[in-house]
Amino acid sequence: MTVPVPLGGQPQVVSLGLGVHGQRSHRDRFLLPDLWAFHLYRYRAALVLDGVEHALLPGSVSLVPPGTVTVYRYRGVSEHLYVHLRLSGEPVGLPPVAHAGASVPLLTDLLTTAVTTFPLAPAAATASVWAALWQVAGLVRPSVEDPARARIAPVLAAVESSLTGPLPVGELAALAGVSPAHLTRLFRAATGRTVVGYVRHRRGVRAEHLLRRTTLPVATIARSVGVPDLQAFNKLCHDVLGASPRAVRAGDVATVTG
Picture 1 (cartoon, rainbow, N blue to C red):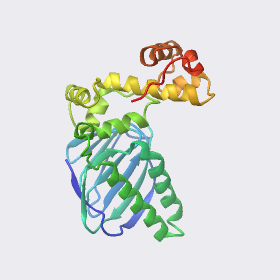
Picture 2: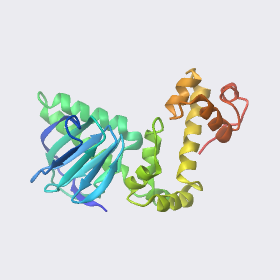
Picture 3: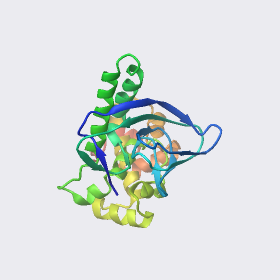
Picture 4: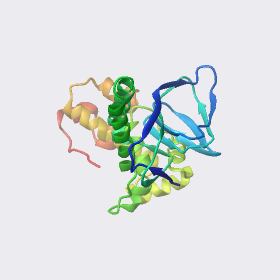
C-alpha cells in the first residue's frame, strides 16, 4: 500500500523535536487534522494507522497523511524524532511505513540538525527536513534488476541496520505486511535462504569483517552482531565462516560474501 506524498514543493515545517513516549501509558492515540507527521523511530512498537497495524523497528520511518487516526502501542519508554508539516507539489507514491536501513545515520543527522537549527534558522531546518523526505523517497524505489529482492527490500534494510539485536521473523513479516510463512517463501525466492538462515548468514558476514578488519575483542564483536553468548558465537562462525573466530581473524579461511 502506498500513499501520495506531495514532495515537489518546499514543505512548511510547523513543529519538530524529540518525542518521548511510553512513560505513563503504553498506548497513545493521535490525530493531526491538517498536518503530515514524519517520524524516525528508535524503538520497537506497533503503529496502527486507520486500523491497519504496522511493525516498528529502530530505524523505521513513517509518513502519516493529515486526518489519519494514529495509535501507538509501546513496549516501554520510547523516543522518536518527529516533524509535523504541510506538504505541497507533485506527489510521490510511498508506503506509510518503511525502514531506513543504511540511511539511518544520515536521516538521524538531517532531522537532528533540523531540530537544533529551527529556532534560529528555520529556512535551513526546512531544507534539512526536505532532504530527509527525499532520502526516504529514494529508499523505496523499486529495483528493475532484481524484482524479487525489491519485494523484501524493507526487510533486508531492517536486518542490516538491526543485527545487534533480536530479529524475530514475526516482526520482520509485519514490517513487510505479510505472514511469516509468506515472508519465508519470498526470502527463499530472493536469497535462497530462509529468513532465519539469511539473518544468521548476515551476522556471520558482519562478524567476519570485524574479525579481519578491526582489533575489537571477540566478545565485543559477538555482541555487535547480536550473539553475545561466546559459545553460540563460536558456533555461528563455524557454521557460516567454516572456522573459529580466532582462525577467521588469523586469515586461515577464505572470505565469505553475500
